[in-house]
Image (cartoon, rainbow over all chains, first blue to last red; front, side, top):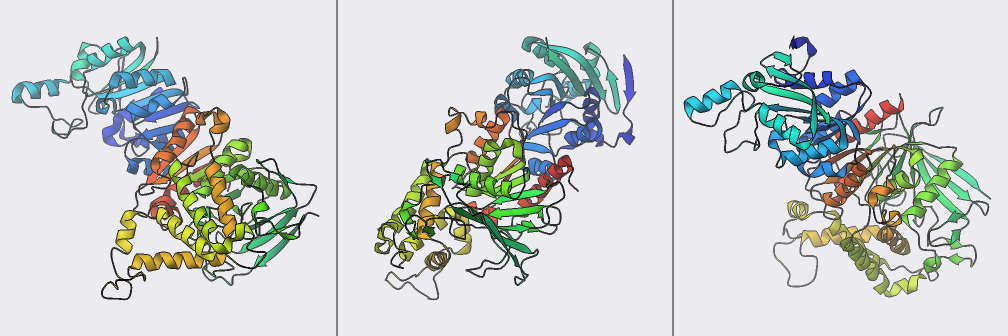
Length: 212
Length: 393
């Protein structure tokens, strides 16, 4: 087990430490699909540093247009309905960064990712983090944190889960967890397989998975 | 005999940012055009324009495909209307998305057209009279086949980028599927992989308007030097409505009256929109041949890319290495986003390299010809990235 400080010199947006971690998990010269790619920050990073053949799907048209303007191959679409278009094994890596909690059917999204990608990388905010638990316990209200900044009534995050929940679902879907990183603040711990402590301490988790 | 005549068009056109070279190439009996209908058309002529300079390895070719009533004057003064700057002045020129300082731009008048490429108004060498309705029915595939013959003649094998809107977009899709190995990148804009029933219906209204004009004479109007101008004008008026949107019509005209304070209780053009449409119709007939309108609308009606691939559009793109950028407009109801998205779905299913942008605008289908900064920005990004991949300077 190693603990890595994410240095600001990486040049990544501070609150998207997970993007740096995802980039580190990806081999060079591969085909990558970034589902929910936003304005293309990760794809641009991967193109620059790993020479990947990158594609993206993004829900917001502003995000898509921003991506295409910077030369990335991105379409407007969403994880719930558009992954089924792609053929089996279309990509070496399919990435879902901080998006799964906003999908309508996370299990089906994972199944589709498993079908079209040889490897999948998923990052998500951990609802089992001790701050979240404590807030709910002490205030009796829906927790709001740095990564979960919306009121309950206007949040896009309709399917929040804990690290443990996610690991359970991965097993059900037939994923093998090849690598996992637990992120808290600016510290990232490579944990191999997330355990009880990670379920309590991680603010975000990043998992690299492949078909069993 | 086959020959090419080039005319340098000097910058008499102040709005033109780049010098256009107009040329006409005739293909003789040794090079007939094999049409989908089974006829082999010979001889035939292609009129085209080029802008910019072909690089040494001929790798910087941008082919622009024009729409139904467009022509080769993509960035130069129109010889009949005198309209300066061409039909895509904000897209083609130095420093513009299709940068004539970097790329060698070719735009050809389609087969069946009326601006110099062989069409129904030209003389049938068999009879010595204008073809009229004896001109064979042409398809989008025929248009593209003719364009490929011209590129072969020019010694150009690869196209860096093929781009076009509406019917031009159909040609782009045809290029990308009929000659995938020749097309590095493709930009179909506001188009569809097949013409919808609604669009066929609108075309039929236009054709019937032309045919109902007594001056049409079953297509033989040129023999008597008449012209079904009224029918063609009505066809254009009906079609023009489909190029706009309700919101744009409301914004531009509303219910405003034309040079009067109150309605006249008659059938004069009381409303500005009526006056505008009449003007659109009357100016169109000066520059367009009625029979060409019949033939080219028919070509669009027949377009169905999936039909030859067992009805599965994705099969048409199987194994493609071309980089695609599909563009649609929110208020386009002639080629709505859903039509364009079908192309994207098929490209995804073929694991193709595709981008898709939908531009938010109230300008309707015609938006692709207008000032849409977001379209320019995204296309500049896409074309620039493709050029980098292609190793173009």
